[in-house]
Image (cartoon, rainbow, N blue to C red; front, top):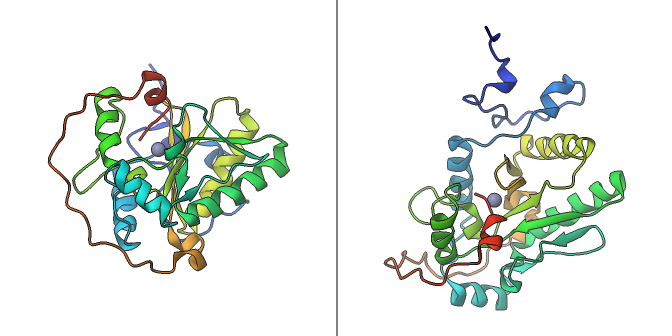
Length: 240
Ligand SMILES: [Zn+2]
């Protein structure tokens, strides 16, 4: 008979619960090495925080391009320490300004440790695109309703795990958990698409979060035809 799984391996219980206490390096190593599993509660929290940060959902390509033109979304800050997955269309290599700051900081800290770059596998999505993704990838979060994929706000990015060594994965978990425990991000580790899904809150970089006059929340349009689906390789690389 199999012994009962230790709590760290019990998938019913999220290992990482939101807590304002800052992670201590003196905690047992096993906790840090545990994957940062997401939970429904975490997705609810990401939606609540997005609402508190007054982030609208980006509806379609016209809405996306308008926000890029107005500087509400900025390019993913690629550099020697940060790349973007080549399958990601040019107009979706954007994120919120404070998310870009987080990415710069994370990529720099990671490179200092490992002398390699990180890869962004997904960034901003439109509600229209997310609806198509749901049809292809059952793991994708909803596009509409109270609880949706936070990618449609532009605040969320995915960092690919493929190619990372065990040491890198362990370092990422510790580093991200510390920032999550400070209440500045929420992170979920995905296994199907093998990425860290990270929602960054305005509080990460308050200076960049000055209120921008915005349109009133746009009601979701009625469902439209979803004929031009993204190519499978593109959709395959994108998770929640
Ligand atoms: Zn994601």
